[in-house]
Image 1: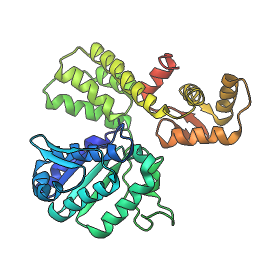
Image 2: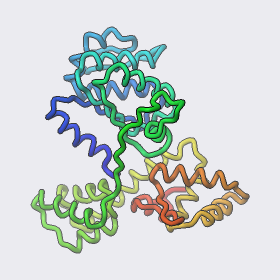
Image 3: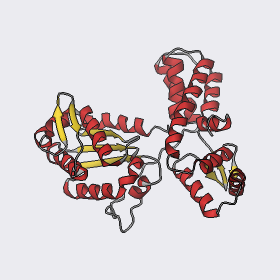
Length: 319
């Protein structure tokens, strides 16, 4: 909720003014190549001008059909070939184009195939530029720090890190938002909203929508924001925990919600498990949580920044 997707979509308006088309591809929940193909098709269906340019080529690609509703993908025996052909059609016919892969870490299961595909696209169609967004773990880390064995070695992308607002910037953000809607807000209400929601742009925006757009009183707007925010965080956390040792990760998160040092995390996990856990396992859990931006580390102390995640964990809404 630090604003990655919002920034990308705001940039699209600038790109449009420069005559550059963008295809936004939402990868949340995508698994495998067919999922990527379908997500790309949905992106193309939102950018019909590009779809019209590639239509004559795309209609001849195996697994691709185009009708009144736009592009649809059927099961293909060679999905990576279908993906290449579709991207090649864009490269040949669409002119300068930006393809935005949002939450790219979701594609970790096909990372090697994707890296090879990207390398080939970079080499063949320099008019296509990719933007990747996601948390700094898994595939995202591989993209940003390609090793010598990676097909992208020597092509490390430019990096842009988004951080929560400072308290001063968060307060300014709320004031300006209310000014735009010509809605009054008392300084005490600004301070309480910043105190409860910290500097997370998504939660501040949700509160602003409740208060300035939906016209809720301050207390109710804040209550609704926290209620909805914890539901969103719970869904995202459940998604993160898929395929991981739930007990170890939840225990680590709960102890860091209060703040803890490494030894305290280890003690909490071993108490919960009722047995010893090796140091490498503890360190791996901590590194994964840091990379996913769920916990922060400062001078050896681990904490949770997001107020919604902290509320979720401290109120025992997840086990």
